[in-house]
Image 1 (cartoon, rainbow, N blue to C red):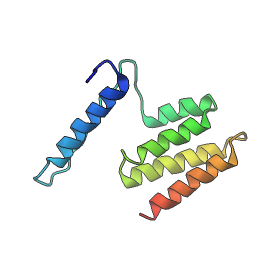
Image 2 (spheres, rainbow, N blue to C red; image 1 turned 90 degrees about the vertical axis):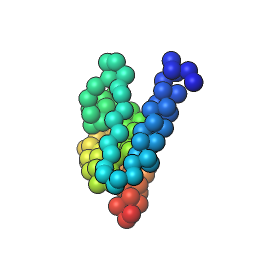
Image 3 (tube, rainbow, N blue to C red; image 1 turned 135 degrees about the vertical axis):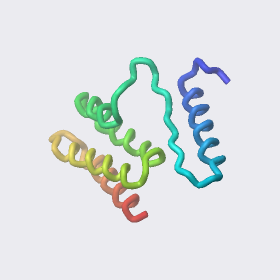
Image 4 (tube, rainbow, N blue to C red; image 1 turned 180 degrees about the vertical axis):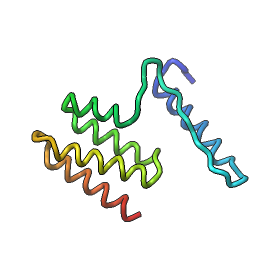
Length: 111
């Protein structure tokens, strides 16, 4: 596996983390922490705020959608609701994008 390729490193890290979680037989909670690239810092909200500042609303929504498989259920909903409020405060956001995010929140909330 090429450790110089960003995507391959991410896949490898994810697989290692998944292996740790699946092999945890004593029932205790595990926490998987992914290494950040050099120069990468901050929270997911910081990353989303950067995208919103650049008016990359679709990228911000996509980033939140990706968190659905990473964050706990309630944490994902908090993040998604936060983004929805942020998008609703912007005048130039495509309504379809807001509808798509709202639909995703509704589906996850029903789980």
